[in-house]
Length: 141
Image: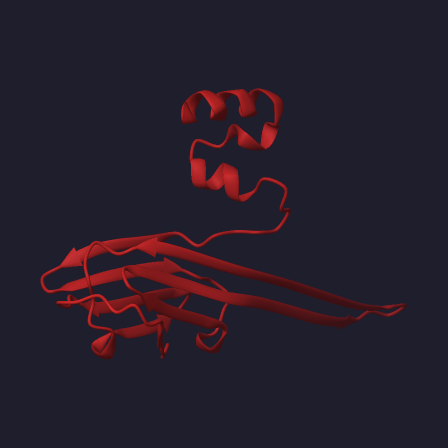
């Protein structure tokens, strides 16, 4: 059913030509909205999430965990000003994103660490015993 609807939409809306369903749907009707790629792996006693977030600073990134859901969100702001001989040029670009992924198991949010460096966010989450129903914010360093 889902594939049939996707094929029908592809035939009438060109934006659905992407091979990735996430990619095609996220661009539908939104010119500059992008979602970061998030890769989740299980390594020993940790769940590791990696996301490519180029052009941001650590203070622009928000991370939270509720139950078995990891949410990464943020805002990218770019401003440039150039004085030319005959005119002044100023460009401003803003964009928000949010990505939520399901974690394969419970995590210990008290010992979770997030590091952002050179456009790559790495979140190390020790596997926990119980899921918390409270939202826990994770500090990015």
